[in-house]
Image (cartoon, rainbow, N blue to C red; front, top):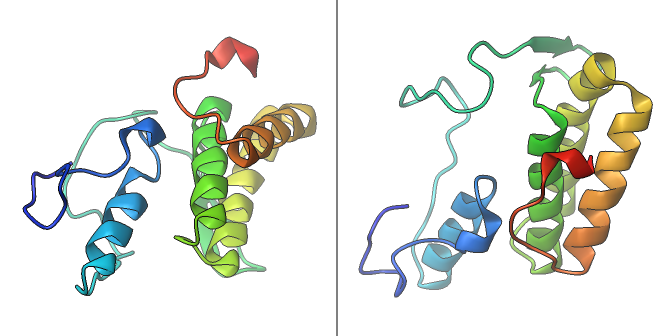
Length: 139
C-alpha cells in the first residue's frame, strides 16, 4: 500500500492480506472527506500474482466476465468482503456480486463441494473476524 499522510498508518488493514485491503484503505480516505473513484476497466499496471494466465468465463445472465481464482484466493475474497460488509465498508449489492462473479468459474473448475466448503469457511471466519493466513490445505 502507498504511504499517504491522509492515513495515519499509510496503508489499509494489513490483516486482510492480499484481497480487499484496498477497500479498507479507500474507506479510511473517504472518512477524511475525500472522494475515491473505482476504475473497473483494463488493468492500470501489469503484475504477476496468482495464476499466470487466468481462465475467463463469460457470465451472460449478469453481463460480466468472471475470472477463475483458486479456492484459497476465493476464500480471502469472500472472507475479507464479509468483514468489510459487517464494518459498513461494502454495500450488499457489491458484496453479493463479488461472491457470485468469482464463484461461478470456481464451481466449474473445482466443483460444488470445494466451492461450498470454501464459501462456508470464508463466511464463518469473516463473521468471526478471524483474519490472517489460512493454509490452503484447509480447503
